[in-house]
Amino acid sequence: KELKKNILQFLSKEKIEKGLNFQNAMLDKFNEHFKNVVDSRSYIMKLKPDEPEVVYNTFESKNGDIIIDDIHLECVTVAKSSIFPESKLRNFRGKKHYYIFRLDDTSETFVVPSYTWNCYMRKCKKIPKQDRIYRSFKASHIKGLRRKKTLDTFIQTIKGEYHEIQTR
Image 1 (cartoon, rainbow, N blue to C red):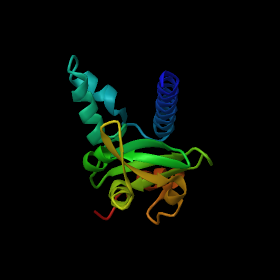
Image 2: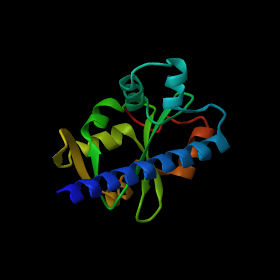
Image 3: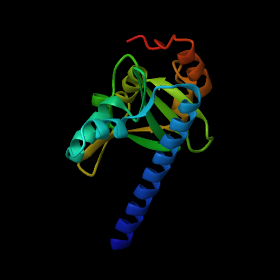
Image 4: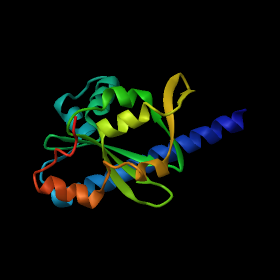
């Protein structure tokens, strides 16, 4: 039982590290193209130093990992079979909120409007895990979404100042 717990902790740390590496890579990528790129956690920590961790977590859950002007981006690394937190469906939404998915198996990166992804996720099976609810999905389903864009196409869309690619 202890071995299983240690393996799960290792896998969780590995997943967190992979996610942070992806987020940093996206920050670097967007900084190459835009002036006002902000790491949301750093932003709120500067604005409100010495707040409890929950304040920073709440801000990030509603505003995503990266903010470019008024565009909010949430970075997500995706295994072939993955789970997605139900809380993210409630918190991360808005006309200019987008998920950036990096598929582990192909290294492809796609951008999906939060409305599109949140609607899709609500159709997926609920999975209770460690006192939280998740939705299960397959990475291949992201490729099938009509409203997805490649990262480069998304960047060009924003540069063209036409970033209202969401309908709701």
